Amino acid sequence: MADGEGAKEGAVVIPFAAQRAPERVVFTRAELQQILIVYGRKVAAGEWRDYALDFGRETATFAIFRRASEQPLYRVIKTPKLAARQGAFSVVEGAGYVLRRGHDLMRVLMVLERPSRSTV
Image (cartoon, rainbow, N blue to C red; front, top):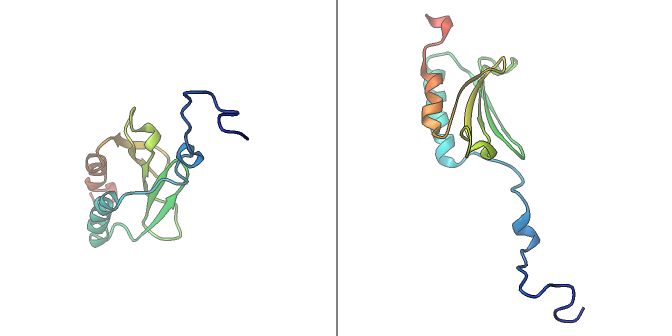
């Protein structure tokens, strides 16, 4: 192909790699540290015992378990597509109810700091 063939004059060419969305969503080191601080307190109190991480194309999930063989008690989910609307972070209960959602991870995690019903 000769120079200028197939390309319109004045067109902006974007490399293919720049057009692709990231392959997976992950928690940053600071976000993971905030989650692990809350998780560590609950482990020390004997309420939680295990966790799992899942990184997908649209969400990153930190699942919290009482025992490893159960369904998660809570899931901390990061969804960057919702950042402009409801906030990128949410805490979801095991049954699927959204407990809190927002832009600031620490404020969203505050819902997990409340004493659980089983200890009251």
